[in-house]
Every structure is written in structure tokens, then in C-alpha cells.
Length: 193
Image 1 (cartoon, rainbow, N blue to C red):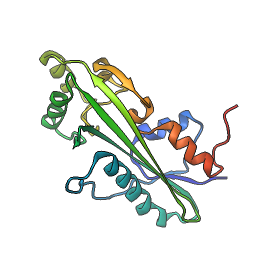
Image 2: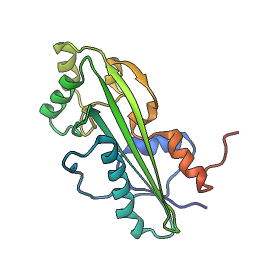
Image 3: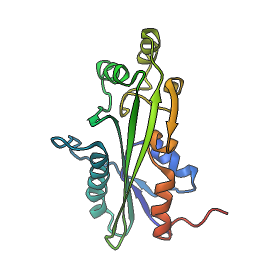
């Protein structure tokens, strides 16, 4: 039996893992400082966050595989917040309206032997130009709360997505193809039949 610990509080990541037949033994969110470093690039930030989460949780479960991930929404080099307030979500929507942006996923797996395996994923998402009434209707709901960039693609924000290039599951919260590759490399996930 492969003991897998998910170092994340995201229910979306748990659901995505179940989708590919991975059932974690325990969810253990990592309490880390998520402040970006000065001039830190979004992709490097996503990987650093995933790595820090895994490293924080791994010592608590030395005989387990610890999987961690982070999702970052960025406009150019600008890292958008995980919207906690209406104002933050409105700022994100205004910035994303009518533009392409990148969603970076960082994935880190620490094995019981202490090996660290890292993957990075990039997805490009293009939003349609949003009218004030569309923005207000979305912001009056709760889909944006705690979401990177102030939106959840699997919710009502799907109406805004004009085009996507790359991994859809990465935008939801975990690049499944890349995660499966990490797990396969450790013998946890067999080939699909």
C-alpha cells in the first residue's frame, strides 16, 4: 500500500486526484508564508510554494509519499492574489477582462526515501471582454472566494473563458498529466488500461 499525504487544503485537488484513481490517506495542509519574493517570476513562485508545502509536511509523515501543489494566476509577471475580498476579486476580473493570462502549477512529491520530484505546468487562458453587469453578477456570488486570480474555471467563470491552451485540470488546481507522471515514476500509479 502506498501511503499518500496531500499537503493541501484544496477540495478541488482531492477531487482531481480521485478522478485519476488516487485516494490519499490523509490531507494535511501546510501552514507556510505565501508571500512572493521581490521580483519573483510566477512560475518559479508556484514551484517554490509547492516545494515549501511538501517540505513542511514531509517530516511529519516520514514513511509516506507527500504530494503538494500550488496554482498561480499571472498577467505577465504580475502574480494575482487568491481573492479574499470583493475588492481583490474585482481587481482581478478587471485585469483579466479581454486578455490572455497564464496559470502556473507547481507540483512537488517527496518520497519516503527523501527524494524530491518536481513538475511545473503552464496553461494560457483567454477571457472575453467582461461587461460591468457580468462582473457584478459574478462578484455577487461566492465562486471567487479564496481562488487564485479571483475565479474558478469549473464554476460560473467558465462563461468568461474564450480559449484555453494547455491543461484544463491545471487551471482547476492540479495538472493531472504531470501529477500522474510523478506518481508513475515512483511506481504508485500504473499505466491506464
